[in-house]
Image (cartoon, rainbow, N blue to C red; front, top):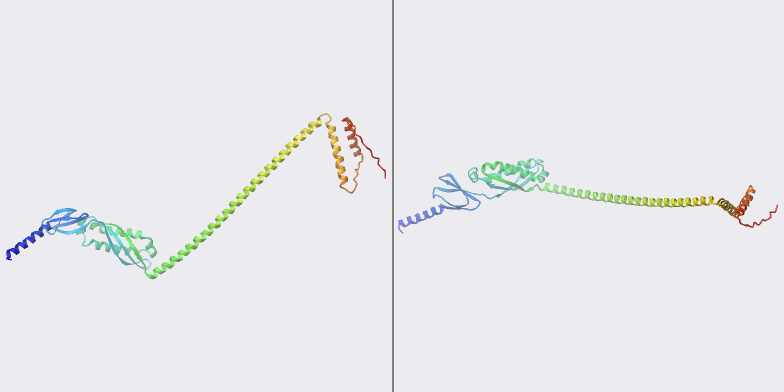
Length: 318
C-alpha cells in the first residue's frame, strides 16, 4: 500500500470524525454548554443541533432534573456534649446551566460540604433530646443555608431530610432505660386514671340511684298525701251533708223530740255497757238524771202518739 492510500484513509477518518462531531442531539431535560474557541457561545436545549467542526465544542453537560444527593454521615457534638452520627439526603435542581458550569467547579461537592457544616452548627445548638424532636427545624435551617449559598451557582435546593441520628451505644442504652421507665410510668398513670374514672362512675351511679329513689319516695308521699287529703275532703263533705240533713230534720215538725229520744237511747246504752265491763256498780251521783231522761223519753213518746209500756221494777231498800 502506497503512502497516498494511507493519506486518503487518514483523511476519510478525519472527515468522518468531523461529520459526527458536527451534529449533536440533546436529550430531554438536559442542556449542553457550547464553547467557541474556548469561550462560552450558547446553551443547547433538547433537540437536534449543528456545530462548526473544530471551532465549537461541548464543554459541559447539565442535567435539569431534580437530583437527590446523599450526604455522608458525620460526627456532630450536641449542646450537652454528646457525639452523634448524622446523615441525610439533599434534593436540588439546576436552574441556570451557565452559572452551574462556570460559577463553581463542582457544585455537587460544594452543596454537600455546606450541608455538613450547617448540620454540625445546627446540632451544636441543640441538646440530644431536641435533635430527635426538632428534625423539621434542622431540615429547614440546612435548606435555607445551602439555598442561599448556592444561588450564585444557579442551583435551587428544594429540601433536605435527616435520615439517621445515631448516638453512642451507651447513650442508646440509657435512652432505652429512660423510655422503658417512661412507658411504665404512663402505664401506671393510665391504670390509676382508669381506676379513678371507675370510682367516679360508680359514685355517679350511686348518686343517680339515690336521686331516683328519693324522687320515687317523694312522689309516693305526695300521692299518699293527695289521697289522704282527698279522703279527708270527702269525709268532711259527707259529714257536712249529714249535718245539713240533720239540721233540716231538726227544724222539721217533731225533729227536736227525735233528737232528745236519740240522746236518751244512747245515754242508756252507754251506761249499760259501762255497768257490764266493770265489777263495781256505778250509780250516778244524781239519780234524778235517770228520772229526767226517762221522763224525757216518755214525753217524746207521748208527743209522737206512741204507747210505750214501761215495766217498773220495785226497788228494794237495803
